[in-house]
Image (tube, rainbow, N blue to C red; front, side, top):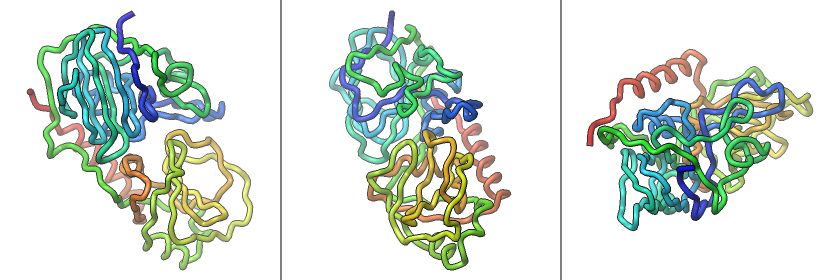
Length: 311
């Protein structure tokens, strides 16, 4: 079977498609790419189906050997990339040959890069998706992160021309982000002083952040809720546990939780959060549901209007 062989798996490399939907009643979270925009561009540059399986490479360190003639694209976090020892560029398509060695170094700016192949990786679906959720041991290869020796099946495909995304259209990653928050129905469990403190303070991303949730450190926030029954929780929900330190829930979050929630971060901003390293800072801005919808459609429109260019 043709495909790519994993020589060195990197710190955390996972197979992801857009995610697993409609399985919360089974206790399964949706998974999928933490930075959906970078994921989408990796597939779009290659002309793939939007749901084609890609690799999410967290922090880098991935080395692959090609057993097929195909075309790849690498997007997302900035990291040194080489093909047979020669430097290659991100955000563009690139033909590779059987026997080529592809190396992704460690991230310089941002934390998550995405590697796609023409036609996508041929990974069986579990509960309707190839997305890997390690905690639940589903998706990907044996429900786990990539290991040395793993085989990533894909078909030999060539493209008529190569494409790239112009630099002015690429996402900008850094060491800080403003996260827009839609206040939730439990916002009234936080008095005006707690609201002011939360929305007027900087928080630091801690090294306890992962695909389940980003744990932040900063001014303590207190809720009037002492105990509550567990309930369903959405992507981007901001839980305030007993220690008063916010947790922004991400793609691999549990499906229910019992901490009060001050609101939810919009999806475009959870992607920005996912590209921040430990030590980076964030602040929160409250917005209405209507403005959240506007921001969503503006970003969607910007993505659809932007066209890749021919190399």
